[in-house]
Image (cartoon, rainbow, N blue to C red; front, side, top):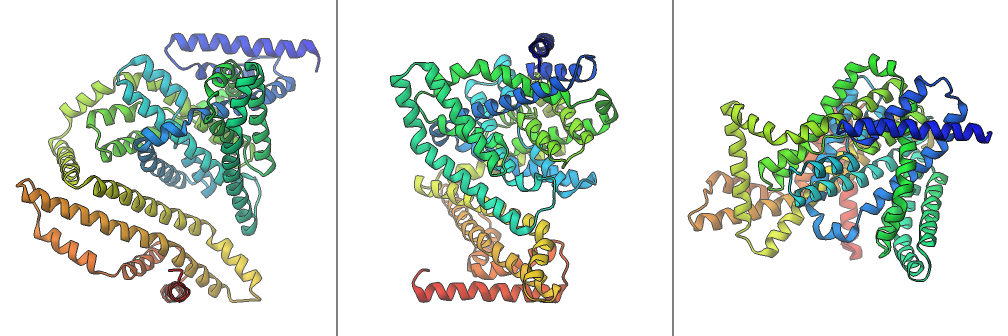
Length: 576
């Protein structure tokens, strides 16, 4: 490549991006939209666009992706997360599964493949940290504490999306993988992430702090960047996206005392190369593709906005936050995150999604970013309008739900601090157990046929239906363990609620019904394992599969026998 060609491309890339960003900033829109617009202009309306441009932008956008993810990782302050991140984590744990499941179901309704539907759920699950932060801080409609909570939620979403992208990596290879290859790949990814973070937290912060105390700042910056690219390279070697390795190193570096210096020095570089990343996204978009898919784009935006606002509002409601704050905060998060571009581009590069799918996602993300300032700025007015004009039946239902929630929290506060803490802990474990059960069933729903084929090929001609029944028995055992945890913790939660109700009634504040007491006694008296076996059997029947009732019963009996054997063995060996 000649020097003149390189300089010409860089001049046009930066100047067009700069002009577009100024225009959109004047319109009170995020600069990201300007970068995307610059990519669209250069790809479709610049006669001089060539392979050289694609090569230059490709290299620089890769650097931008690495630096962007490195900086997002550095925003995750583990110390701050331990102190004040409980609510943000709770919101993420509630809304992320709802977003992914909602996106997955929407994908299936649209006739997409299972992988495309899962990928779509992952794409819409997050919000843009950069856009949300800029808009909310500029408008000042929420308190500083509320804005910091929202920003922390977006950071937790980023972490969750990194995990989703890691788990989706085996499916984004563009080819067909055997079951054992997928399992092996997942194990490698999990081990890599655990080792990278554990060893990194032990060594990297100390090394960087020593460099910061002995050496000039530029050496600190160079060393941290070298570590960032090294981790990105290692993640590529094991079949993961380089974004994941860069993010992990960012998390590790965030624990160094010299983090502030690194962030300050790296920001200008990140801004330049991040622009290149979004320009590269724009280069993939044809205006005709946006126009041809405008209906799908609007539909995706509508699904995203409803799911995001609804799930976040529900999480704020459960977290005992005021309804108005919950609504305004949920609306303030309706902007697709940087990961929407990253995951969509990874899917496009892997050949998993089509160009029309990619253009539709990008178009919907752009609409969400354009509308966020308008929606967020008027969220209070929208809330007041809904309150004044909503049907009385709906308004009464909301008020009743709020009253029930407030009563529960008030009654739980009558318990000791230890009991209240255990209540939150047990309720969280019960919820996580429920999510684990759902995840297990999704895995078996997707891979049961592959697992059956694998067993049939390697078990010396064992009949296919027998192999299928064995896999369903494994499914039964797999969900029995989290089911036991779910039931055990739900009993504790229910006991605390009944006891709190009794204390409130003793003070003349409760309304304990005999029906609640009868249900409590019946629920407590039923053996945990009997409930586990019954519910697990119902789940096997409800989830679609390829066997009949007889095979279901046989799978249940085999599963129960395995569980009883493990229980007896642990008692005999003293490990129970």
